[in-house]
Image 1 (cartoon, rainbow, N blue to C red):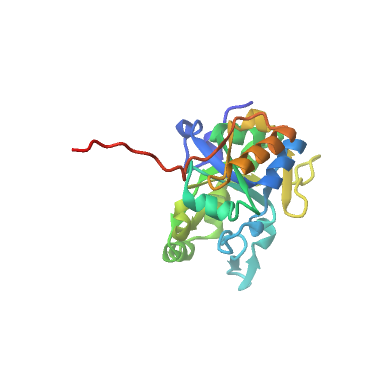
Image 2 (image 1 turned 90 degrees about the horizontal axis):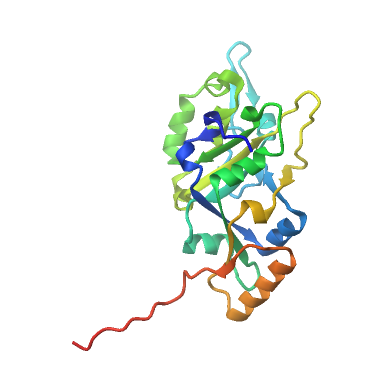
Length: 260
């Protein structure tokens, strides 16, 4: 694999590439990943927060000559992303992404920024610096976002044509989501000569071998022992060779203290 270039990193540097990051997959989705050895990044319009893609999806460029506006929605369709977190184990993340362990159980995986990013870039590109980005999310208040947009021009974002300024804006969220400590994997779908766009219906699927890219699989801390045994067996049948454990988040400690 090739080394990551500085231009591909948003609010990260080379020293961050070895940092661990985490993601909770729905159990069925994770079993499909294991079987197919494929993962996917999706268009930001499919992300949960309707405010996510505030720049490309909800911004128009004013043409001062004709006094008309040009929507940026067409550009929005060229971007794909996936959300990860620096948080290793939090109550909020389990409750959001594994809302009911009896019905919608989640599986948390661990990897590093380097492993995840280099695996995506391995799909190949004649201009990797234009297509692949990974960034640390910056959290802003709505007033800060409004002020930023009020001082921004399209030329500020498009200058150089490298895509890194667009990627930077896609790595911004409202402070209401600050607890997620998010890292974003981004792909810009471009039509190069001899290589058509790769995304289909807002999804870009690519090869990912969990045994190579991921380091462990962790089950919901609220699961019963019998469910842990059952799900562990299901994952192993699906091809999981990673260490599988249950999160210790809700395990109560025991203490012994002296009488006096």
